[in-house]
Image (tube, one colour):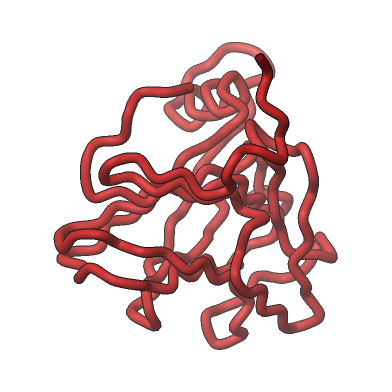
Length: 180
């Protein structure tokens, strides 16, 4: 019997893993003329989120453009957060896209994605990464946070560069179960 989409929980807890759909943010904070918007059905699951309008200059932590996600961490320890992004390219041609990640007002970690399209032969790691991201319909960037206490935490995803499109967060203190 098929399960209706409305019956699937947006947050899926499984042992030491918490998966959160990007459109299920707790709070969206805009700035510098940018607002967050959901793009239904984009990506591998429910949809994706990005800042609009597109074509805007980079922002910094001081600009405050971010999404917040409430997360309950069950046990203390090192935490890894995987950001699943829709494969996109840097519209400025520099070859990289940046996004930030922080927990509870702590230091923002900048994650940089370097992808290069491969119209012909694949000769660089960035081209292989692009091909893989397109095949998987996802690009995963990971940040590590040492020793996080159990309890409620606020995960913040910061908009730094244009054209970064978030589809899911996977927060883990243990191994991620295999899935596609």
